Image (cartoon, rainbow, N blue to C red; front, side, top):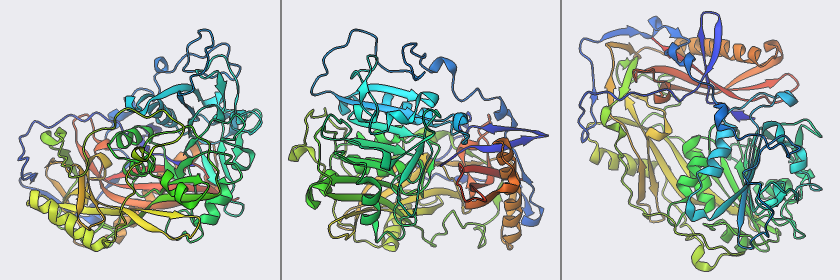
Length: 595
């Protein structure tokens, strides 16, 4: 199950899915970059929450967006590939495999029609970005990439995960044929057995493959050393939220010790994942000098899908080596003994001062009337990033089986600063450079580290996320968020991201000074109605599906802008559906807008 970032737009009786990548035209109005003021329109017309209209659509022209996948972008099917997929290799005569070559392969399943599951269209982009946006410094060679119905369980099953193939770069195919494999699809974990299962694109021989059917990285010919699972619940800790994982050792080992026969690290999720690209943000983070593979993954997850719990686990013959493997900043081909495991994961807390976006306008009054439409200022395309941490990019990758001491990232310090103290410092620093701007704290994200020897955990990273707000209503886009990181000395170590300038459009505002419970309830009704339409479009009976709203935020998303760059105020919900037989379905997003 993966969370979709798509929303419903209903016009009359027709329903279409609309992508977030709407055109955003920059406003020509001059703004004060230093002060980043919010420019209010004159003569505002203020309406009460009881008079607010909740509408299904803001930008009907989004219906005319092109298809998500341009057919010209998809590589042609190789007629000699019996699986019906395509490879990244040329068709020249086979050559001897270079001993220093580090191969990377990918599998993406967006079309699940062969097995009756719901489609998740952005898996294609997810894997494409991982394979094709890797920096030169990574020193990686693309081996193959299978998509949709070319992805079958034989690629992962222990008896067939590394077989001869004349049309791949390494002349081998299967999950164990490359040093790195990136898989993007549906996934779930059985809470009792802790067996992980992911969906294939083909029903032959099976629609799914489970971790207890795999044997990855084995010493007799297995090549896999790093497995990326861009699926839900691939590394589930405790109840999935990361809030209570006292038995993390038992859970991680129970899921992967049987399958792992020499793989160094597995990257995945304890929670659901979003139907977005994690490949691109991973390489952006990874390419920073001194950035470890594990921290790059967790930072990418935090920025691409705030609130979702990314996890990395690494193995070794002892606790020290397993923990050191979390600090690898390049990729290596050496086989490892998995007697011990270490792990890092994202953990989120939220603060009530200032109010978090998740509860804004639902439990308390706003800072003032909120405009129904805004624009991002014309100067917001400038990089408002100040970095006080390590600068620069990585240099060439050392091609070897094991890292030398200098090839490991510095082991992170233990972070002891409290959330409240971190929030106070982050907001103080922002106000020093942005005295007239308004912003809210979105969340506080900590990265925790533990191991299977003593199960003790420590905090190795803490980041406060700030969002620009308009009278308390935040801009929700992660690429318009400021991230303030803290070091072991309790001081700010790095600032990245940006807070945009905002221009209010029109003269209509909503007065949230009254109780907003009724508005919240009305929004839920509209959202659930849209969710039922989605369930129908999946060919399912809504009466047989239980719909749960797992998150509900009110604010602005630049991704919802119409062709004029106007961004509506709206409620944005994540829906997690399950059948009455308790089978999880694909989760998805629904938005409604306020007028």
